Each structure stands twice: as structure tokens, then as C-alpha cells.
Length: 299
Image (spheres, rainbow, N blue to C red):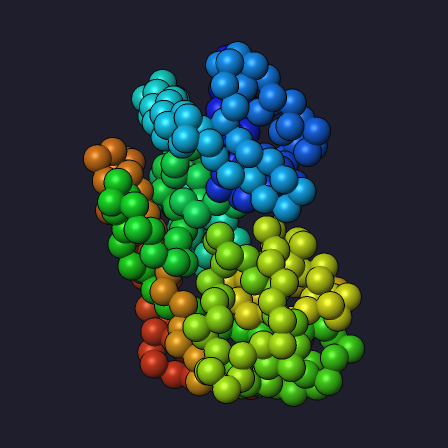
């Protein structure tokens, strides 16, 4: 039995399909299938029921999954204990801190020249906390898991992302209702956009699920979908063919830093306060509407 087999089982269940699990793990679908088959041979039991469209756990699979999660979590903790505390790793799933990312790194480097602040992208709900890839995580949707604690650091405006040759791109700001006649690309695991953001009378024509920011951007640039995202994405991912436009009359996105409740990393308090200071001067924190100039600059 190998750790990669346990990771494959967890990924398939969380992602829902072998194809999506392969994308999360960064391997081929065939590799995921081999790992699951090898695990079932090693244990001598069937763990998953497979059809062309659906994957479901067997009763034994349910128990093995729960134990696999515990094993992977314990391994992550062991890795944290064994690792030298010579850097602070900040995980993020979609965008880091947008325009604040570099400013925070530079301020941190001046205050702690021997302890780099490193941003790592991990596309899961905990942004790398659960598997030990990150010491602290940038979170834009609440974590229901009581094992993690979080501190609010600021708020971000929401932006629409549309193709540059779309009629929507000719406008400097948009209303959420303007997107209703389009397919909206949504990341259901780590994104900040849900159908609840749209009023009942202006629900999108269709929804296209995505698993990564590059896939999301490619769909939008091709005119196959539009998107709604936090301001950080607009700042961090300028892309030919994609125009960002400020959205009116939608709630801002709350940005938090999260960590293991029983194992807070070094420098946590200072990191939280440093991040909060960066947000204090933003238009959203001052209670102002993000104006036309911002939407135009990001086009």
C-alpha cells in the first residue's frame, strides 16, 4: 500500500470523477485508475462502484476513505514537525492577495530577511493547509472544518470577466443581471461565485464548472463563458482576450487567513496584522464603490 494510492482515493471521491481527480493531482487519468486498482488489490476489497458518469463508495470504501484522510492528515503534521521553520508558506487556491501580494512580500523581507514569505498555489478548499503544503492559507469562502481557525484581513470588490470582443467589454462597469444571458464559469470547490449571487429573476442561462484558473480564463477568452471573481484575480491574472469590469450592487468578497487551530505557525499575529494594514487604504474598506476607472484600467 502506498501513500499515492490513498491520495488518489481521496481525490476521486472529492472531485467526483477520475478525470477531475487526475487534474487535481496533476497526473493522467490512467495513473489514477491504476492507483485505485492497486489499492483494491492490496486490500482485497472493492472500494468504488464505477459507471461511465458516476463514482460511488462501497460500504467498505466509506470506512477506508475516512481512515485514509486521517493517515494523510497525520503525515502532513509529521512533515510540518520535521520541516525546518526557515520560511512561512502562504497557500492560495485561486488568487493570492492580488495587488497586495508583492507589497506584503517586500515588507516581510525587510522585517524578516532570514525568513522568506513564500506563496504556494494549491487548488483545494483549504489552499494547502490540509496536506501540509501551506502554513497559512488565503481563504475567500468560509471553512466549515473546526480544525482550522481564521482571521478576517479585508474585503475585495467583485469583477466580471468577459471576452474582449464581447459587447459587455465595451462598458466600464456591469450589473450582475447583465450576465444572465450567458454561460457562467464557476469553480464549485474553491471559487467565490455561486448562483446565490444572482437574483432569482436573473439567473445565468447555464453554468460551466471549472477546476482551475487557467481553464476558467481560457473559456472566457474564447467567448464560451463569462465569469465573476474577486478583485485579486483581476490584478493577478491579466490575460489577452479577457477584460475585467467592476460589478455594481453585489456584496464584496471577505478575505481571511486560516491556519491549523491547534498548531498556529510562527509569526502568525504579525502576518495577520501586516495583511490587514495593506487593506486599510482600499476603496472597499473605505466603503466606496469601485469606480469606472478601475474597471477601465483592467480591461
